[in-house]
Length: 347
Figure (cartoon, rainbow, N blue to C red):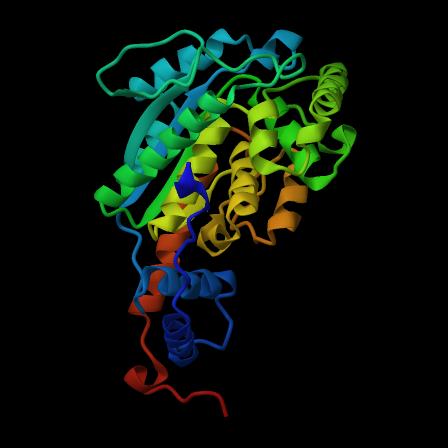
């Protein structure tokens, strides 16, 4: 998997500066558009054009099951993963509605749903029939890890072929908040009690049980802590691995990435640990309602665009943030300068 550590392009500092200079000339007080100015300058540097655009958005949703669901860590049964994949394929999920509203390309990839599905629109790149129970065994073999990472890279390659301006990764997998929580704890030296949330809607007793399961996972795989690939192999999921591979490859190909919530940010953290030059290519869409998300935000030093209490997954939070980025680009390109509008600048 030599491609994993290939460096990503460096943002164009001259185009960042050119966009910054244009912002200073637009008919508004300096900095008045706040974070909208920052993101558009970053996009200019990444897209290597002074007037960036986000017309072509590519969304890949990766689905897989988790053996740790056997530990009763989710409020929903494992069968829901396959049922939701069917919902995606029939256009009934939140991400379908959002993708249609955005005019985005949406694809669904099965990287390891326990019950294999067949559908003309489903991309099948299965690494297995769900992961092993990470509270008892490593979640996946080395070969399975590589298959799942490659599934993500292939999605990014398709986005590149389609000349996407922006890549969004989504996920579906019952019990994947347990896997992500274990990864947060291992990589960031966190205690499960302060990171573990309700996931699909656990009550207080369910959360405390989930804490004990996460601690068992951490104890069993202590040797893997701080090694991103080994942590992912032992504690993660096929869809988290696919997201990690997708973020790495998208950045390597020069496609900006809009990261979704709790699960997706775990993959972003892994991608940056594997190849630090991924970091400039990442934008964080929103703050998840999961309590552990704040720790990853701090670790990545990325400012979320939205804070709406969302915790759905699927890439939905990222999709909701796309119009905000598009508005930033429209303002940057469409506003008049002080000179064009014959408006006096700052004294």
